[in-house]
Length: 247
Ligand code: AMP
Image 1 (cartoon, helix red, strand yellow):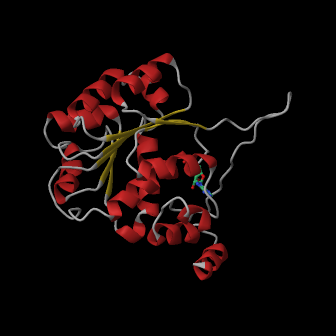
Image 2 (image 1 turned 120 degrees about the vertical axis):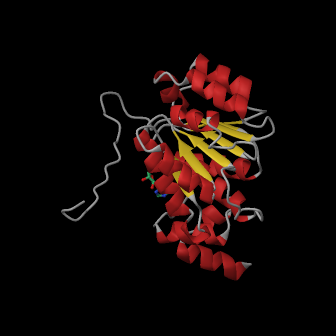
Image 3 (image 1 turned 90 degrees about the vertical axis):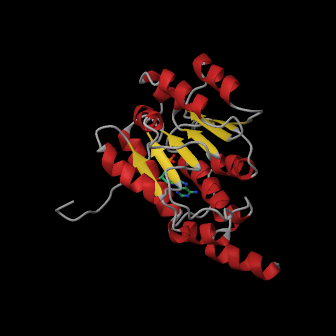
């Protein structure tokens, strides 16, 4: 055990392993340069792995994507029935915009690379047929905007009957964009016995109402925004990607 602790400290993944994540995932995180979990990851990962519902108050930039993506992948690791085809999905992540759908799908793909996770972003404006072809081959996680998800559900090209987990990411944004009814319809068509995680920057009364109706005894995690001195501006995470001219 001591030896293992030393190894983990050496490759900087001990914090993630302590949260219950498998070596396959912690090795990927180490290769991405993630040294320690962020506060939301520390608090959200263990209950999500244990199957609890979760109400997470956290903004973008806190590491919330990995906070729900890693437990989903960890549970997927133990799923023996995984390699089936057909349009039934086990995990549905709902997001407000196509950009976020692509970003979250990309993150799941990146963290789940060693597991061969099959992730499909589904959003309006894209060909239904093309989405259907991929869905039929079998997908582990669908990351969708609510309107297009509901379109597929109504046409029976997205089957939620085996759904294990649904994640509502940036729920406040989804409501602001007028997706309240679509969300209700999707959650109503999902099995009652499922895991639900809801993330939102604010817990406005409308969000609380959704949480009350659709979450079952959730763990509540709140990550405060970074405190700034009076007159100071909050730090902004800046990222630059070097790409080739064609990209
Ligand atoms: P998010 O809040 O999910 O949009 O994540 C913000 C950024 O933080 C993303 O670029 C992630 O790749 C990065 N990130 C998430 N968790 C960690 C971590 N534990 N260590 C380092 N970077 C992280």
